[in-house]
Amino acid sequence: MSAIVEIVNLGKYYRRGEQIVPVLNDINLSIREGEFIGLMGPSGSGKSTLLNLIAGIDRPDSGSLRVGGIDIAGLSESELADWRAEHVGFIFQFYNLMPVLTALENVELPLLLTDLTRRQRREHAELVLDLVGLHDRSGHFPHQLSGGQQQRVAIARALVTDPTLIVADEPTGDLDRKSAEEVLELLERLNQEIGKTIIMVTHDQRAAAKAHQIRHLDKGVLSEDQPFLPDV
Amino acid sequence: MFFIKLILRNLLRQKLRTGLTILGIMVAVIAFCLLTTVVNSWYAGVDAAVAKRLVTRNAISLAFSMPLSYLNRIRQVDGVQAVTYANWFGGIYINEKNFFPQFAVDAESYFDITTYYRLSAEQKKAFLLDRQGAVAGRKLAEQYGWKIGDVIPLRGTIYPGNWSFVLRGIYHGAEKSTDESTFFFHWQNLNETLKKRNDSRIDQIGVFVMDINHAERAAEISHHIDATFKNSLAETLTETEKAFQLSFVAMVEAIVVAIQVVSFVVIVIIMAVMANTMAMNVREREREYATMRALGFGGGYIGALILGESVILSLSAGVLGVWATLPLVDLIGEKLVSFFPIFLLSQATVLKAFAAALVVGVVAAVFPLASVLRHRVGDGLRSMG
Image 1 (cartoon, chains in turn orange, brown):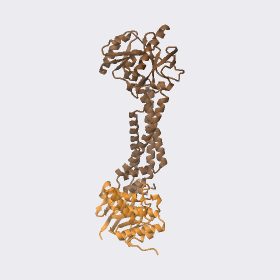
Image 2: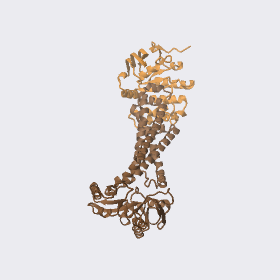
Image 3: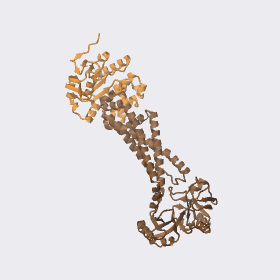
Image 4: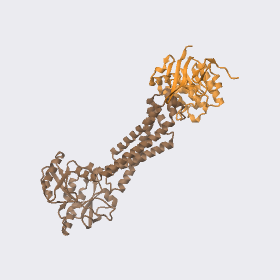
């Protein structure tokens, strides 16, 4: 399969007063379409920064970053926003659902940026909510759902626009073991059955076990490719 | 619809905060409307002034009078169509608290010129036939429970002694904004009493009021009248009715300016209350707005959400404030009719209150919005909310 994400010599720095703090150094990474990749590493290693760069919510300071053949670093803010809306599905550690919207409305939210009619939006949202097994919770607000259910709503929201890739930042980080397992199974199904490309940042070995390959980041440096080797 | 729904639900998230903010703005809007209405009530006479009407008084001050003999000479001035006259009486009804304006007027001509005072033909005839008769405004009569035929005693201050009048008519204002709290009686009654007392103020007039044929000739006619009495014992000052009324407002100008400043301060207070509420709302939702931006919503959409919420909040409070002001204005107008004969919430004041609420809503949204857009999406996503 062709590479959907191509990162060459990518660097990212932050300024702290006069000081320049390197976060990512000379990153080279290629992710093929339909791949499920896990990014692991200690806190502050730059995992989330790399994920944000791939998802187009931050910009690299050096190197090249192409997603789906597009040099996203060269896009303007509004072009980048449009690109994200069309190509990226986000899953966050703390779900990041709108508390004033029901599960169905949360899933419908990204579709407001499309040309779909209200009825079409509803139909799409219901379909995806059904896919994650929460059709009967469509009228519930986030506070009326368990953590696992909220994360499944967030997954439905990430899926509803049929994005090119799904980025998940610690998707099981706030869940109990059972809910985490359900969420990981769902992500695995999305990858295997629908062929979605998933990039997941995680600390969780069980979560990493679902990935096709694991990449480790340490102090902003990415390790060589390695298949997942479970702890014994 | 989704957009409006999101704004309204966000508004109702912190019900207590939203409620208290609305209450705060309501109180400020009420204060703004009442203060503006107080200022307007001072200008009511100016607003009601007729363009084709002139007022002649003694050039030294209103406290000095003019001889009645001026009447015919004013009548002869080219352009003058009708003349009447009046004297300020300044009597006390029962006690000093019961203040209301009283004028001794030429009964024959006064109500022909001051057509904004509507008096029925029957009552006017009764007034003309009774030298002891008087006419009171509707609000004044209602305030003291006077009925036609009642005897009204006044204790004179400028013209000492006990005076009594028989109420022969109750006038209504032609407009809602016409003063209905003035008391009129026969100038001849006053003059005859002064004659009996051998008072030095016999045949003296406070002001002449005249209608002219063209408003554009006001300056020319005024000049002509004043020139007629140049170098006499009582030189005159003639001005338009509007200028005459403005001279009264000028006496309390400092108070008017102070009230206007307070009105402005009230708006600034509303702005601070609103800005604080919006800043808190937006700060709490930093991660939500960052999430929306990550999903692809642009700054315009987020801006419209914040601005919409702020404007809906401030305008709702503005509408409720104006609505709550209406009965208060009626109550104050009724209770303080002696001080504010015309105390009406004008359309202009209502529009000003809404405009202020709108401006407050927009300004209160600007800084939180700028703060949201200034933050990077990644930082917003990390915020704890």
